[in-house]
Length: 158
Image 1 (cartoon, helix red, strand yellow):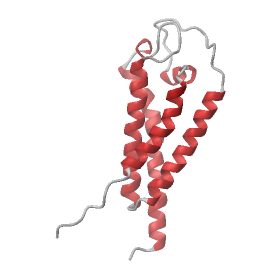
Image 2 (image 1 turned 90 degrees about the vertical axis):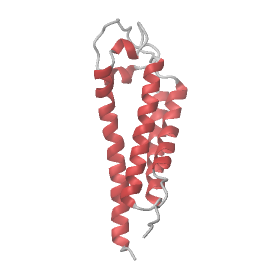
Image 3 (image 1 turned 30 degrees about the vertical axis):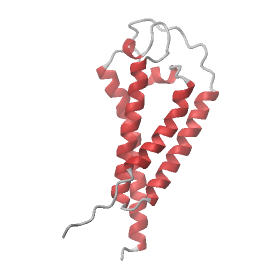
């Protein structure tokens, strides 16, 4: 029978390390994109509207990172309850972040000159993302964590 303190510690460590994995992907994602693509590949000419390539990259990295974070949380915590707690925390925080992003007016950022060298992180801040994308990210992150953490316990054949 596992010790209650050990179970609680594993649950906390699973949620914490899942969050670290998710947060570190948010740091690595812009660097990876910046090395693989030019700013003109990611944003439409003369404005900060993202291209379909950029939207696809955002969604695929968010899905991959949340799957890995959910799997990591489940592996460390051993049971499923911490995965639900982790998904709820990320879902609530990302929903509030989306609401804040929707409430900030971004109607008239300065015009963008083609070939302009700007960090992708700065571009993401002034990017005029579609409303559906801002609302889809919390759902995608929460679902990815739940799917990543839903692995079944393997039965031993010994």
